Length: 187
Image 1: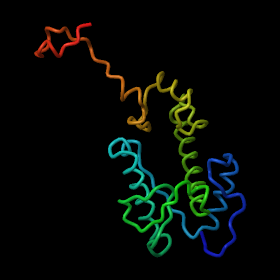
Image 2 (image 1 turned 180 degrees about the horizontal axis):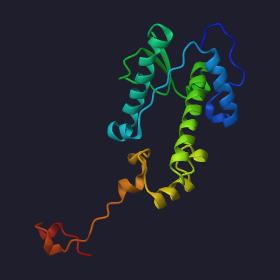
Image 3 (image 1 turned 90 degrees about the vertical axis):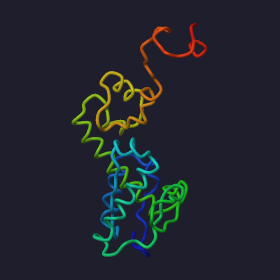
Image 4 (image 1 turned 90 degrees about the horizontal axis):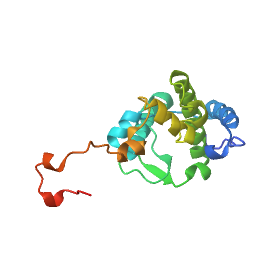
């Protein structure tokens, strides 16, 4: 956001704002911002490298786009949360920054509006998950849809706990294993 310019009225932590307000504020943020750059990581990448590394990857992707839009790379960035030792860019981390820092709150709003639009588009392609209402969060309706319809390519398998912890193994007769009997549980 431009230094010395008056803050946009109503900007706050995106979680405290309703969807319609976020959309209006996001448009104003785009109008006033020096640059807006988005980065993302796919569900597959999150499953492969974990949420921490996927977050860093998404931030790097956003930062890599800044020079083309701003004319130079950022010298210092503000991020919401804890420091990221592998970001590769000098940064200040602000825990719960979307409620404490204007620029982070603006980024939070833009990110949430972008995610909501993506989830609405996915809802049109994958009927039944109610993504247009739950934005992919694990609501009871979303979990019921997972049970009924299964996973899509857009679900993070590492976040689907039932799949992680339910090891449905066929019973094997004790004699069918070449294992010493002291390791066999026969109750």
